[in-house]
Image (cartoon, one colour):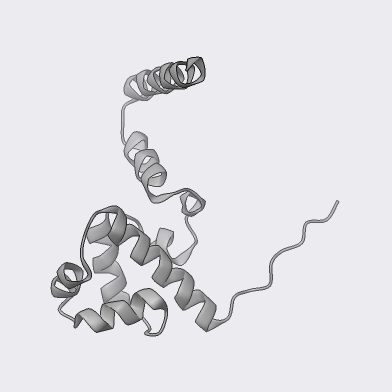
Length: 121
């Protein structure tokens, strides 16, 4: 059984994908473009261009954005396994990974409780 890999994305497609992830993370956190642009020390229009894939993001900008958005750089460039999850779920997974084994077990029990409660409705 063979698995087909998708053809690699070209530079424009990669920039668009990166920009979409950056935009989604910003919106998820409820930040305005103006706020993020000020944090980076760039014009709001430059941030808009980054988010639309029309401008390349510099490594230092990406590092600062990852820190601000509480995500890994790997997430934004598509190398993080959690990148396939919505931002909120990926954030929860990263936070859960930092918990003790005992707390992770309790979190798992709580998730099962929530699932059972949802299916009972």
